[in-house]
Image 1 (tube, rainbow, N blue to C red):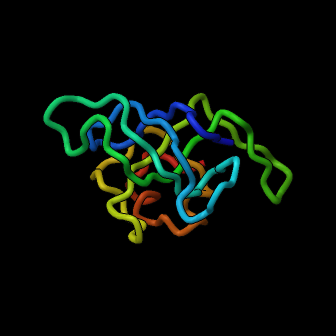
Image 2 (image 1 turned 45 degrees about the vertical axis):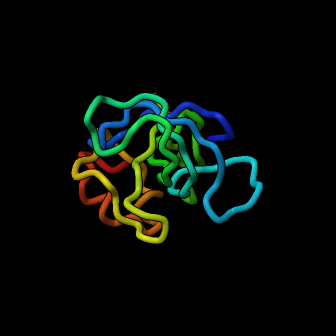
Length: 124
């Protein structure tokens, strides 16, 4: 569960390190975002000469959350950090980077982000 101003780790190789959620993409004024949902972010920390710069406003998909998520089979999934993957453009579900670091949740693939799932190291 991610809310406004939550600090997220960026789990791809676009050059961004930390991002902050500033809103939900196409969802109006919803309070929380969950695994596999697209959000609007602003980059707060990035490496020099990278694809993305500090202060840029982008769209990203949530791939890991600290707050546990209950699945249909009764099991729960939770991770050590809150993480997102930056998307290429507003309407396309492809990532901007070419690598995805760390595990991602199965809910990301179920939401239609198949390219992100194929680039990930592990899917839980």
